[in-house]
Length: 115
Image (cartoon, rainbow, N blue to C red; front, side, top):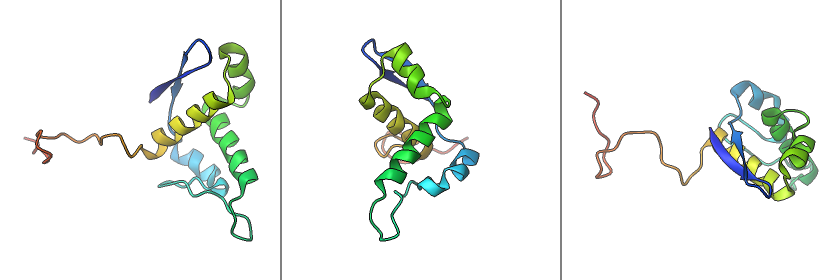
Protein backbone atom coordinates (compact mmCIF):
# COMPACT_ATOMS: atom_id res chain seq x y z
CA UNK A 1 0.00 0.00 0.00
CA UNK A 2 1.19 3.52 -0.69
CA UNK A 3 0.04 7.02 0.14
CA UNK A 4 -0.64 9.76 -2.40
CA UNK A 5 -0.99 13.46 -1.58
CA UNK A 6 -3.96 15.16 -3.21
CA UNK A 7 -5.68 18.53 -3.13
CA UNK A 8 -4.41 21.94 -2.12
CA UNK A 9 -3.78 20.76 1.46
CA UNK A 10 -1.79 17.67 0.38
CA UNK A 11 -4.25 15.27 2.06
CA UNK A 12 -2.89 11.73 2.23
CA UNK A 13 -4.92 8.99 0.57
CA UNK A 14 -4.09 5.30 1.04
CA UNK A 15 -3.89 3.48 -2.28
CA UNK A 16 -4.09 -0.28 -2.72
CA UNK A 17 -3.72 -2.46 -5.76
CA UNK A 18 -6.55 -4.26 -7.50
CA UNK A 19 -7.38 -7.76 -6.27
CA UNK A 20 -7.43 -10.70 -8.69
CA UNK A 21 -11.22 -10.94 -8.42
CA UNK A 22 -11.49 -7.23 -9.24
CA UNK A 23 -9.21 -7.59 -12.26
CA UNK A 24 -11.50 -10.29 -13.62
CA UNK A 25 -14.42 -7.84 -13.59
CA UNK A 26 -12.28 -5.21 -15.36
CA UNK A 27 -11.01 -7.49 -18.13
CA UNK A 28 -13.17 -5.86 -20.82
CA UNK A 29 -11.29 -2.59 -20.14
CA UNK A 30 -7.87 -4.21 -20.64
CA UNK A 31 -6.92 -4.96 -17.03
CA UNK A 32 -5.44 -8.45 -16.96
CA UNK A 33 -3.71 -10.23 -14.09
CA UNK A 34 -0.22 -9.64 -15.44
CA UNK A 35 -0.58 -6.32 -17.25
CA UNK A 36 -2.81 -3.64 -18.68
CA UNK A 37 -3.52 -3.68 -22.41
CA UNK A 38 -5.32 -0.53 -23.62
CA UNK A 39 -8.68 -1.32 -25.25
CA UNK A 40 -8.98 -1.01 -29.03
CA UNK A 41 -11.84 -0.29 -31.38
CA UNK A 42 -12.92 -2.86 -33.97
CA UNK A 43 -10.67 -1.08 -36.47
CA UNK A 44 -7.66 -1.55 -34.15
CA UNK A 45 -7.38 2.06 -32.97
CA UNK A 46 -6.99 3.08 -29.33
CA UNK A 47 -10.46 3.25 -27.75
CA UNK A 48 -10.27 6.42 -25.66
CA UNK A 49 -13.89 6.21 -24.48
CA UNK A 50 -13.49 2.63 -23.21
CA UNK A 51 -10.14 3.55 -21.65
CA UNK A 52 -11.70 6.51 -19.76
CA UNK A 53 -14.57 4.30 -18.62
CA UNK A 54 -12.05 1.72 -17.38
CA UNK A 55 -10.11 4.39 -15.47
CA UNK A 56 -13.32 5.43 -13.68
CA UNK A 57 -14.16 1.78 -12.93
CA UNK A 58 -10.69 1.20 -11.45
CA UNK A 59 -10.93 4.23 -9.16
CA UNK A 60 -14.49 3.46 -8.08
CA UNK A 61 -13.47 -0.16 -7.36
CA UNK A 62 -10.63 0.96 -5.09
CA UNK A 63 -12.15 4.10 -3.51
CA UNK A 64 -15.92 3.46 -3.66
CA UNK A 65 -18.69 4.44 -6.06
CA UNK A 66 -18.89 8.10 -5.00
CA UNK A 67 -15.11 8.62 -4.80
CA UNK A 68 -14.92 11.57 -7.19
CA UNK A 69 -17.53 13.77 -5.53
CA UNK A 70 -16.33 12.84 -2.05
CA UNK A 71 -12.66 13.61 -2.78
CA UNK A 72 -13.46 16.82 -4.63
CA UNK A 73 -15.55 18.09 -1.69
CA UNK A 74 -13.51 16.75 1.25
CA UNK A 75 -9.98 17.08 -0.12
CA UNK A 76 -10.23 19.55 -3.00
CA UNK A 77 -9.08 16.90 -5.48
CA UNK A 78 -8.46 17.94 -9.10
CA UNK A 79 -8.21 15.97 -12.34
CA UNK A 80 -4.42 15.70 -11.93
CA UNK A 81 -4.96 14.27 -8.43
CA UNK A 82 -7.24 11.56 -9.86
CA UNK A 83 -4.60 10.78 -12.51
CA UNK A 84 -1.96 10.38 -9.77
CA UNK A 85 -4.30 8.10 -7.79
CA UNK A 86 -4.96 6.00 -10.89
CA UNK A 87 -1.23 5.63 -11.63
CA UNK A 88 -0.59 4.68 -7.99
CA UNK A 89 -3.30 1.98 -8.19
CA UNK A 90 -1.65 0.59 -11.34
CA UNK A 91 1.77 0.64 -9.65
CA UNK A 92 0.36 -1.22 -6.65
CA UNK A 93 -1.39 -3.73 -8.93
CA UNK A 94 1.37 -4.43 -11.45
CA UNK A 95 4.49 -3.03 -9.79
CA UNK A 96 6.46 -0.01 -10.87
CA UNK A 97 9.52 -0.56 -13.07
CA UNK A 98 11.66 1.85 -11.04
CA UNK A 99 10.93 0.17 -7.69
CA UNK A 100 13.11 -2.55 -6.23
CA UNK A 101 11.79 -6.05 -5.77
CA UNK A 102 11.41 -7.43 -2.26
CA UNK A 103 14.40 -9.72 -2.40
CA UNK A 104 17.34 -9.58 -0.02
CA UNK A 105 20.63 -8.49 -1.52
CA UNK A 106 24.18 -9.00 -0.33
CA UNK A 107 25.07 -5.46 -1.41
CA UNK A 108 27.03 -6.47 -4.50
CA UNK A 109 23.92 -7.24 -6.55
CA UNK A 110 23.98 -11.00 -5.90
CA UNK A 111 21.19 -12.76 -4.03
CA UNK A 112 21.83 -13.72 -0.44
CA UNK A 113 21.24 -17.25 0.70
CA UNK A 114 18.74 -17.88 3.45
CA UNK A 115 20.20 -19.80 6.31
